Length: 120
Image (cartoon, rainbow, N blue to C red; front, side, top):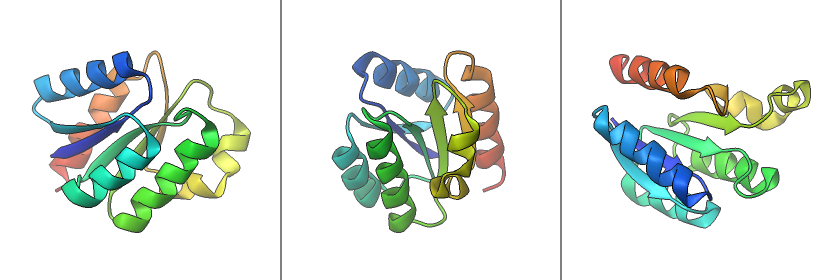
């Protein structure tokens, strides 16, 4: 399954992409919002793992909206440092498959991606 990894932190971008590739996922990387949108349009990933603060929350949410416009069936997993009630109430929350807390999310992220891959 092709996965777009979108993060403005180069270390996180490389690490997530490398770890997902080691687990058999075909990864494409986007270091910013505009690149994520362009790459999604060209590469047609089945799933996107997007950092909420990309580098700002508004740009992260803009990325989510754009990805779902490109492909309404694309699965979006949103990574955040803090899960709040406010985040769950944002209109974009309905566009994402999962909101995952950074730091301890590696196992959960793999679990969600494997489940998505198995359902295809």
